[in-house]
Amino acid sequence: MRHPAARALLAHTAAPRTPRFVSRAASSSSSPSSNSSASAAPATAPLNPRWLSDLKARIGKCIMFGLKPAQVQRAGAILLEMSRDWRELVAGSEGFLTTKGWRGLYRQGVVWGEMVRSTLYGRWVGHVNNVTYNRYAESARVNWTLNYANIHDPAHKTEWSQLVSSMGHGLILRSIKTDYKFPMTYPDRVTVLHKLRSEPSPDTDSFILDVIILSEVHRRAAARCVEDVVVYDYKRARKAPLKGFMVEQFRKTFALQEAAKQKYGERVKRLAEEVRGLEQDSWDKEGAVEDFGSSKQQQVE
Image 1 (cartoon, one colour):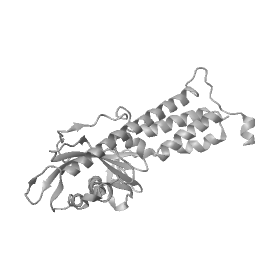
Image 2 (image 1 turned 135 degrees about the horizontal axis):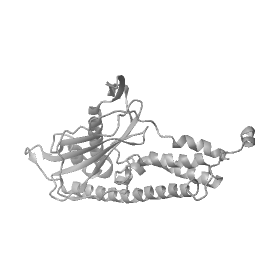
Image 3 (image 1 turned 120 degrees about the horizontal axis):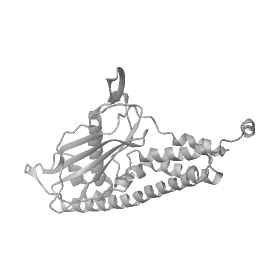
Image 4 (image 1 turned 30 degrees about the vertical axis):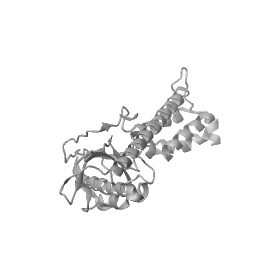
C-alpha cells in the first residue's frame, strides 16, 4: 500500500495547466552581435524548457506506483528543494543572478489591466499584452543598473545613476528582441532578471543583455528578451566606451554569472540523477509490481 505521506507529496507534483494558445514571437530588432568573449552554454541547454515540471511529474509517477517510507522521504526532499529554489535552478543554472542585490523585478504582481482578450477557436481568452513584457524588461533593466549605484559600487553612485538619465554617459536601448513562451494571465507574479552575455573589454561601447521573465505560477520563463544596449555620451552626442570602473564591475558580474551557472547547473544534474534513481528503485526496476493496497487496508482508512 502507498505510504500515507505519499498522498501529501502528490499535491506538489501537479504542474499548472497552460492554456492552449498560439502566440507570435515578436521581434523588434535584428540579431545583436558582440565582440567580447561569450559565455558557454548552460547545463540546462539540451533540456526541455519544462524540465522542472517534468521532474515533478516523474516523481508523481513513482509515488502513484507505490514507494516505501524511505523512498517517500527521498522524493519529499527532492520536491522541497525544487519548490524552495526553483528560481535558482531555472535561472541560476543559466547564469542569471537571483539574489536580492541582482534582481530587476521580484515577484511583481500581474494586474488585470495588463491583459488583452482575443478569440481562439470561437471562444474568448485573455493573456498579458505582449508589449507588457518589454515594459517588464525595461523597468528591470533600470533597477539592475541602479543596483550598481546603490549596492555594488556606491563609491561611483553618481556615474551609475547617470546611466539611466540623459546626463553625462547614459545607456540607450538600440534594439530588443522578445520571444514569448506561453500566454501568461492574471493572477500571477513575475521575477525579471538580466545577465551580461559576454565579458566586456576596456573599449566596449555596447553590450548585450539577456533577460528572463519568470512566471511564479508556472515556474518557468514566460518570455525571454535580448537587449542591445549602447553607451552614449550626451554631452558629445556620440557613442562612448564604458568607464574603467564600470568595466571592472561588469567583469566581476560576469564571473559571478559563470560561477552561478556552474553551481546550479550541477544541482540540476544531481536532481535529475536522483529522480532517475527513484524511478529505478520503483516502477522501472526488473520485476517491479505496482502497489494497489488491499481491500482490508482501504477499509481501515
